[in-house]
Image 1 (spheres, rainbow, N blue to C red):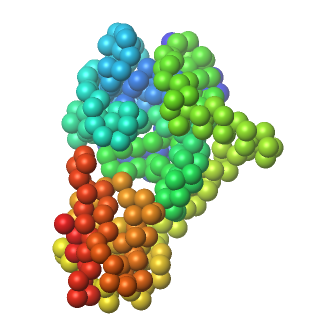
Image 2: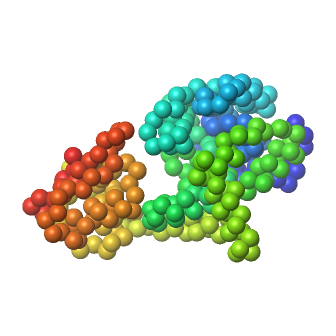
Image 3: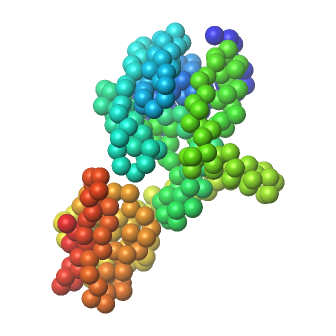
Amino acid sequence: MNRPGPAALRVRQAVRAWHAAHGSGPTVAVALSGGADSLALLTGVLAEGLDAVALVIDHGLQDGSAEVAARAATLARELGARRAEVLAVTVDGAGGPEAAARAARYAALDAARGGAPVLLGHTLDDQAETVLLGLGRGSGARSLAGMAPWTDPYGRPLLGVRRADTRAACAELGLAPWDDPHNLDPRYTRVRVRTEVLPLLEDVLGGGVAEALARTAASLRADNEALDGLAPAPSGPELMVDEIAGLPAALRIRTLRAWLGARGARALTGAHLAAVDALVTDWRGQGPTAIPGGSAGRRLQVHRTGGILRAW
């Protein structure tokens, strides 16, 4: 491997800063696709002297995916990873191919990590795309806060590093990353945000948009953490309307989200929460509100009876 240049050093410094803030030991698992982001992340982890285990997901969605995964695992061993394992998954869940692949990937990583944190190669550019997608869905401040540097057991050391830097780091080190054709497929919404929406915004607004979106995410994440700490934490299967009706909307919605999550709700949108909130603040005797449940195709029904919310 060649001598590191400035981009590789930026990646290494990002890993060092992340580990100082969030690391709990020398062993980490790196989710490795063979692409520039995860490959650069692995080199930064190894340069920092961490004990790296590379976990390579084979989604089986493209011809030759097993060979791509095997090459990534071999390269990880050559670079110095203590172990590299290919995890073959079946992508057949609900929510479309992107959501199903993500669910299968995270389940496999969690099962194989052996108690170690899993580091993901998400960059500042990925963060900017996530914020724009959340804005388009109207999911509120929680969605606009983007991805966190640490959400147990997943870490994202490169959220302050540009995608151009991960590519440059690989080039400096003499590494040839794999280019996933799905990353240029306009059938995927995120790809169109990456290749069409963000470049247009950068052009119209004079640059700096990706960095500004990432700063927005960090600011909103801090606000969310503070408000989450102030919101009541419901503990039972029933929620008394009188206990939350007088709360500010920001705290009331957070309380409802936490309560619904404990009842098995998943993938809640702003519209779902507004409909449940109407059972508290705009009660006119309306019937139950349906929200997504914990399994494919399942819906929870939220009822208000006698001043009490129940979900089943």
